[in-house]
Amino acid sequence: MSSLKRDDVPVLAIDGPGGAGKGTVSRLLAAALGWHYLDSGALYRILALAASRRDIELEDEVRVAALAPDLNIRFGTGHDDSVWLDGEEVSAHIRHEDAGTMASVVAALPAVRQALLWRQRAFRQPPGLVADGRDMGTVVFTDAAQKVFLTASAEERADRRYKQLIAKGIDVNIGDLLADINARDARDSNRAVAPLRPADDATVIDTTRLSIAQVVSQVLALVTGEN
Ligand code: C5P
Image (tube, rainbow, N blue to C red; front, side, top):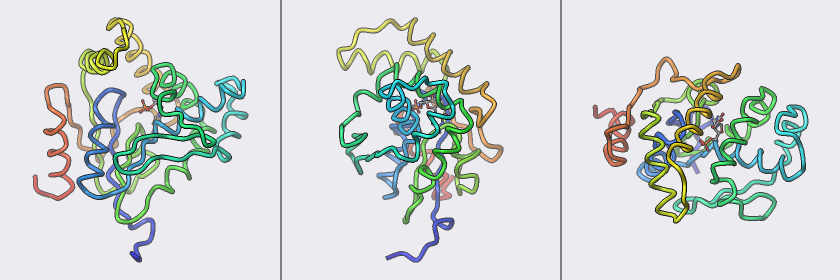
């Protein structure tokens, strides 16, 4: 058993807009390092789903925040990226485009962000944590040893999402996807609390012309100090 105190457990913070490849890259990094993985966006998505199922208005800050402490959430580990809410597997529900939009509405409410803080910090367990989100380096893990901000042009992100959905047999319009991405970016970047921005000490990587493997090896080089 490790005697590391929680604050001594190393954190690799990976922030950036939706579609920049954070999820895929973060999971691969966690596997390569043998560290835990926090998908913080999933927490916002689950909370929005739970609120809508209880007919709570997504803008109702007090009621949405009050839901957060009691949510019974379970994440799969390792290669298992499934998510359960109250014993029901909700992975497909929360990965839907609409769930992302709903998440960005509840994520703009300060009391909601506050209510989810301890849940996120509880993922900091030995031997280390790869934390994926929008404010991992700026708010949740300000003492992270390494902070990375992954970005890509909105067009490239829409194109990646389009290919993912088409591969799943879901028919979508790329213009609609681009409009959704721009609207979500605007909401995430302009909100009053924890707006989407790189931490001052973050390394910004533009993934527009990089493969996933290239991004993973650039970040690993940062972590192991081999750059
Ligand atoms: O990363 P993902 O697309 O799953 O996040 C969904 C939404 O949750 C984001 O658009 C953002 O509004 C919100 N979010 C956030 N802070 C995080 C992670 C996600 O505000 N750390």
